[in-house]
Every structure is written in structure tokens, then in C-alpha cells.
Image: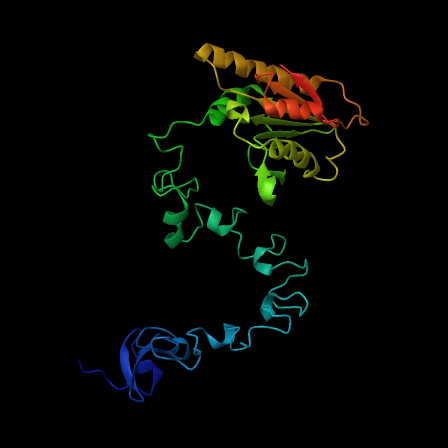
Length: 308
């Protein structure tokens, strides 16, 4: 294939066409010459560009070669707070991730760009969102979310939520707010949480009484849920409803249990509370009397245990 010599006058060059320049094949992109692979010449690994180090990385970003992108604190200069990096905003955050500065990580819908089904780049949308509805995020191998997968049996937790939530006021959190930590410092979310002006109510749907869980973890879960709240909410009286949905023989029995849970939550809203009573009340519903978690909670002086 005969490749023409690069025209001296830019107006005579064709965008995207290959030319010979100093014995090498170059591509004109309308502004500058690129290598035959369509990349910046000095940064092309296939062309062994001058900007590539012996470790096959960009020289500027290679720590082993003391790349110029790193500061004396061994951080990237642009994102180093101690060096007043250009990537740090006036709120002492990364500019791209600061909502107040209109960071580029957020889209016009005030969501992180990669978490927004409308604004997520097309090459990432299929990887991150359900391939049927295109709205819910999923990391399942089938790329189909639980709501769209007709072969998936609904978890009992969601069956309970779908039944009781329409009968109650909207919660502050529905498995969506971090409220503490459990074993191994893993963050956790309350199944359902209401944060009111004078009280906090948390509902945990404990399949099979959580018999397979460690006692210490279950006790720590309640402690960390309270002290993991905002400091203004930690001083409010707190109610825990630990609800066991399993063991029902009929749908009618299951619905009776769920209605009982609704009434219990309503009573927690209506019960008189005093700011000086910070001892959490733990309500165990449909737990067996010899359950290890129930017995352990009874022994703790900082819990008031109620069995229903």
C-alpha cells in the first residue's frame, strides 16, 4: 500500500488519513499527528514511545521511576491536600467528587454518573445495569436484576417489607443507610429504620431466628446500630423489633404475623418516651424461648428485652 508523504500545509491534510513522516507512518487527527495505532506518539507502548518507562508504564505515573506526577508525600500532586493540589476544591475534597463544586463525577440528575442509568457511559451501562429494565444496578452473572428475573424466588425479607410498608409511614431508610458496623468492621444497613424527632425505631427481619449467626455479632449489631447513628440521634430512645417470619404453615398465619409486626411498630410510635431513658428496648417477635440471641440479650443490663 502506497502511503503519501505528509503535506506541509495543514489544509491539504485529510482527517484520519495515514501519511509518511520522517520515515514513520502517522495519522492526522485534524489537530496533530498520531502514531499508526492512533495514539499520542510518545505515549504509545507498541511504538516504544519516549514517555513509556522500562516497567511498561507511563514514566510520569510510575512510582519505581520516581514519576513527576508524585509529590514528596508519595501522592499524586494534583490530589495531594498537603501540596494544595489542583484537584482539591475549597471544601478540601476532590473536585470531581464534590457536589457543592459541581464535580464532574455527578450528572445532571444529582447522581454519581456511573450510578445513573441515563448518564452512565454506554460502554459501562450494560456491565452495571440490568439488561432487561436498564434501571437497577446488578452484579449478577446473568446481568438481570432480581426484580426482572422470573426464575428467582423472592426473599422472605422482601415479602415482609412489601406487605408491611404500605401500612406504615415512609421509613427514613429501607436497607439503604449505613447505621453502624459489625464483626470484622464490615459496614451494615438496617432492614428498616425510622428516625423521628424524639425516637428511633429499627426493624430487623431475622430469617429462622438467625440461629446460624454468632451471638457476639448479633449483640454488637444492635450496639453499633445505635452508636453508628448521627450524634444528634444517639441520645434518642431506641426500639429494636427483631422479627422472625419463618415457621408459618399457611399464608393466613404469615399475614397475621406481619399485621402483628405493623401493630407493634405503630405502638412504638405512639408509646410515651422520655429523653433520659436511653436504654434500648429490644422486642423479640416469634422467637423461641431458648434462642441463644434472646437469652444473651437478657443478660445485658443495657437492653430491655420484650418477648412477643
